[in-house]
Image (cartoon, rainbow, N blue to C red):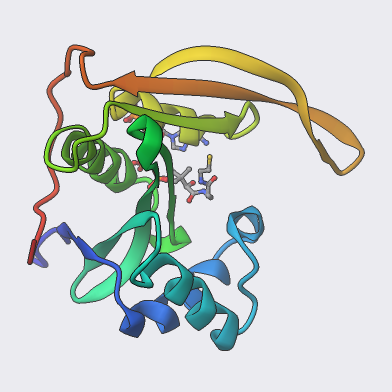
Length: 179
Ligand SMILES: CC(C)(COP(=O)(O)OP(=O)(O)OC[C@H]1O[C@@H](n2cnc3c(N)ncnc32)[C@H](O)[C@@H]1OP(=O)(O)O)[C@@H](O)C(=O)NCCC(=O)NCCS
C-alpha cells in the first residue's frame, strides 16, 4: 500500500521557481494570484518574496521535496499587522493541507514572529478560501461590497482578522522544517 503523502513547511527559496510556474499553470483560478505565465516571471515572483529587504514571510508547502503551495504573511511592521494569503497547486487541493498550513503559519506569525493582528480577504464566490481562513482561526469581520469587477460582475469580498489575543482552536499542525 502506498503511504499517504504528508506535507511540510519550509522557507520559500529561489529553486522553487519552477514549481511555482507549474502551480500557476495548474488551474485558471491562479491568475488572480499574480502575473506568472513564464518561468522568468515565476523567478521574479519568487525573488520579490525572498529578497533581503522583503516585507514578506513566505512559506512553501512541500510534498516530497517539491513546492505545491504557498502561505505568506506580508508584514506591516509599524502596526505589527500581517496581510495573510495562500494558494495551492490544483493537484494538491482538497486534502486539507492549505487549512493546516495556514493555521500553522498564523500561529507562528502571532507568536515567534511577534505580530499582533493578521488580516485577509476573499471573494465570496471562493468559499474554499473562506473555509481555509476559518480553519486557521480567522474571524469574519465584514464584507466589502462590490469590491472587484470580474467578467462584468461586481463581486463582494469577505474580510477576516485574527488577533494574537483570540482564543486558538485546536488544529492539525504541519511540521516546519529548517527553521
Ligand atoms: C482556496 C484554496 C487555497 C483552497 O485550497 P485547498 O488545498 O483545496 O484547501 P483545503 O483542502 O485545505 O480545504 C480547506 C477547506 O475548504 C473546503 N473547500 C474546498 N473546496 C471547497 C469549495 N469549492 N466550496 C466550499 N468549501 C470548499 C474544504 O472542505 C475544507 O474545509 P474543511 O476544513 O471544513 O473540511 C485553493 O483552492 C486555491 O489555491 N485557489 C486559488 C487561489 C486562491 O483563491 N487563494 C485564496 C485567495 S483569497
